[in-house]
Structure formats: structure tokens, C-alpha cells
Image (cartoon, rainbow, N blue to C red; front, side, top):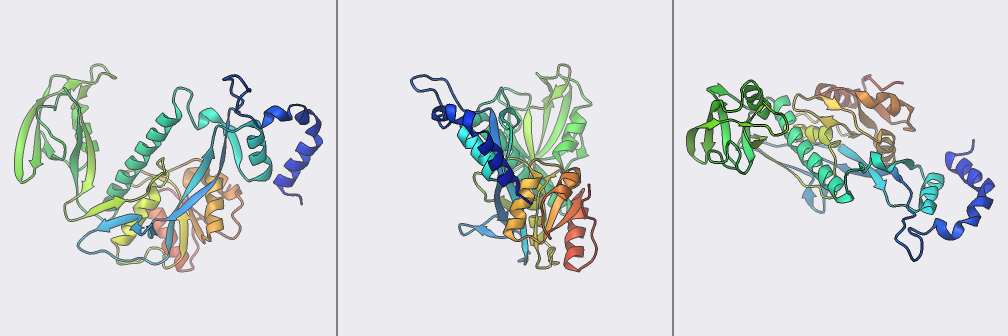
Length: 355
């Protein structure tokens, strides 16, 4: 059977005559002597790099866990990515479509019309940072380890600007003990602008209590706003640092979470097997769907993975992908992921993706 690439080349060959007529322009990114762009409104998506979250990059741990007791897991827990190419000429786009396994997608699915390349890059960086924070908290929750709420930013001239500082640790709101930002938000959402709240904090070695008059959310009139950004973090005896550059988006969340769990667990999750996967992670341990699943599976297969952890929401597409003899496990939450790895290593049946 002819491969898709061969069929595509044949199609282009049969249609070569009209293409030749404009051949001088096809490879240019603009019309000579003008600012008129000749790039196509499409992006090419293909398999991207895959990185072992249990390993090192340039001599530095990808996921560096510091705690009173840590472990050195065996096996692999590889996160997967999608490569994206933009600003292509017609010739470049046709080349990627005909000669590679890339797929062409409308450019506005990669770069929204109201955003610049730089804004998209910054948004992806922020999403990646948020996924790192969510991964740490999900891992702490899975392992039943304590966490704390840290003030990450105080909005200038906001309700809390004269009362709270960055790195303050919030311990209670109106006398209610809190350990997650969502718990603070749940208390605030039931109040109105102008209401007063009592915030208990740790600032360095001091325990303080401050009273704050709530402001109004400028984007949601009538809703109260505390005016801070918060992060959940492990308590002082545990720290988790993620050391990857030039990768964006939230889709590595689950794999980061599993790496933290593996390094803090005596039991080796992978059992020495090569596991890869993808999926967002929420603080409640749910795993969310991502884009480009077929390209991530291809990258994992090429890297030698034996088991791929796929979000439940991507399972139909994952099952249709060309994955060879690599097993594709259906994962809805962290419990599913951990169970799939343990059972696979033990030679037991696991729940696989299906169409």
C-alpha cells in the first residue's frame, strides 16, 4: 500500500503544470519590492521533543524534588510535545504536507487573530508555569502531604495592597482554616464589595491578622475582589523545581505530577518500564484532554515507549493513531494513571483506549 506521503507526492506531480506557472513566487515570503506577504494562513503541527521527567537535561534534574526523604525511580516517565511551524511559504507548507507526517491547521488555531506571536508565547509560558504549580499540589494531595497558600502578587492599589505582601502565607479567612487558593476564593465569592474580611497570615516568623475591605472586580461588577494572586506550595520541608526551558502550554501537567509522586514514593511507579504520556492536571487530580495527541503518540513510539498514558477525552483519536505495539492506556485521573503503570509493569491487563 502506498504511504500517504507517496500519494501526496503523486497528487502534486499530476497537478504540477499550474504550480510551475507561479513557481517563481511559491518559495518567496513576500512579493518582491512590496510588503505584501506570501506566507500561507496555516501552521504545520508534527511530533515534538519528548523529555524524561525522571531524568536530566544538561546535567540538571528536569523535576528536582528536595525533601527529607526522596527516592531514585527506575524506568522513564516521558512528557511529549507537539512541534509547531508558522510563517510558511506555499512551497514550505506543501513540502511539509507532502513529505512529512505533519498536519496543516488554520493559523488562528495556533495564534488567535487578536494576539501576536509574542503574546501567544507569553501565554504558553504562563500556562506552563500554572501546570507546574498544579502538578505540585496534585502530587501533594495524592500523597496526603500538607500544603500552604502563598501570596504570589499583590495588585497595586487593590484592596489588599496596604495589608498583604508577597510571600505571606495565608492560614485562615474569617477564622476558617484554608490550605488551597480555591478555599479562599469560595469564601470571598459569597461576600460583596465593601465587606470586611479577617485574614490570618504568617509573615516570616510572625503570625499576624489583618482586616481588609474587599474591592470590586472590574470585570464582574458587584463581585468582591481581594486583589491578590495566590499559589499553593508544599510546606517548608519540601520543595519542587521544574527546570525546562522553551516549552509552553499546560499539557505536561500529569507527567510532572507523576514524576513528583515517583520521587517521593518508596514504590517505583514504572517498575522499570518506559512510560510516556500527556494531559493537563487539575488540583483535584483530574486529567484533561490536550491537542495534537497523534503527534505526541508518534514521538513517544519513536522514542521507544512501551506504555502511553492518554487522557480519556483524547482516547478515540489515540486509538486511531499509528502506535505500533505501544499500549495506550485510558486515564481520567491520577489514580487511573498510577494503576495503569503498576498493572502494566506487573503484566496485568489495563484499560486501553478504544474508538
